[in-house]
Length: 446
Image (cartoon, rainbow, N blue to C red; front, side, top):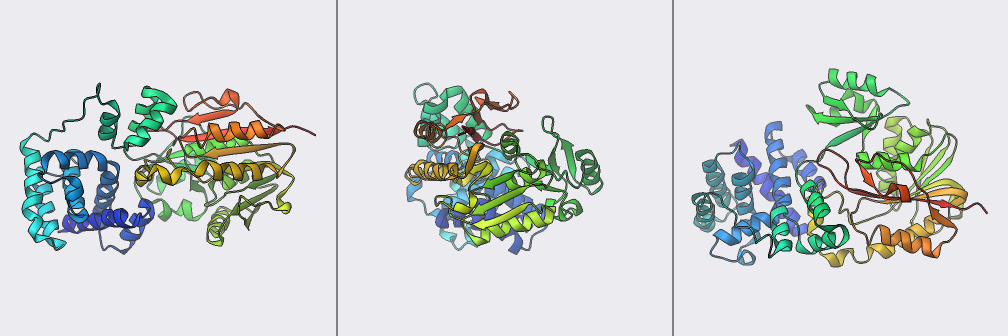
């Protein structure tokens, strides 16, 4: 009964994502908060929901191979049932085939589609009888189609990455876009050392280990809910991906400096900068809406960071009060193509939705550059893997702003490429950072 309830919850989430374009993390958190489910079942819902989102193109390819109806002729509510059933058959070894089929048929009736029970049953059982075989497009003759179906990624995005990065790198990106991403914690070093926090978290029931390359970073392996940990409530750490932590290391804020974060919410980079400055100096953290700046304020309060001030400001509009900053962080709105494994719905956006981003990013970068003092530094970053949003924006800026030049920096070779030029791409790795882009730009002294 619990699994049936969990499957219905997962189905409702998938339908909501399809119909409303809901953000996966927000939709899942809201659904699990409302659902009367045990933790085991909540984990099952999460695995089903994210799994189906990740593998949607692959699953629909299977449906098209074993159904007598074209996928676009199947109602979305039944298609979501089929996706759930096929995902369990293909990727969840703990679910018996019989349970995957029977529960899918029950779910079909439960959602008021009794007439479709035979269809659902037939498609799933046909797939099982055929040995759960997927006849992928020919890899040599139809490479883009193969990569699209195998890694469940739209063809337009596969083509873009092949054009930008080549076949080998594209396959690495596609492979790393599937599966659960690592969770990393940034230690609040003004309150506790990494070694002591590791001990404390272990005593609190968390499974953790130190990060091999970043001393202030801890890898969280599970064991409990992060927000329920006493250490979290005491403000001893915050969740932050490795890429964002490294971004702040590249910016390298110093004690007593004036830092401007033009697109700050939810605040992770501002927090890291404050810790690197030992909570001495001034950080102005801006965002477009009061609701988002409040997130920064709440996080800073929990962590005990007094140097952070927030301001509601449009990053494309000039504000005289922000001028003269020693360092400016410009982490612009982007497509998010580097964090697909955290938000798989991102890859299903239409490419037309992303066309205006580079111009918006360029406007923000140009405006942010006005706040940098003579001799100061400007860091441009995105969590995207798109040369249109990354290299092309920065090169356009440098060509039209001769007072700035790219400044080389250092990062571990295993994490990033290109840092020796001051313009680096971090490619996603299964146990490593998200996809990320960093450009460090220095303003010449006048």
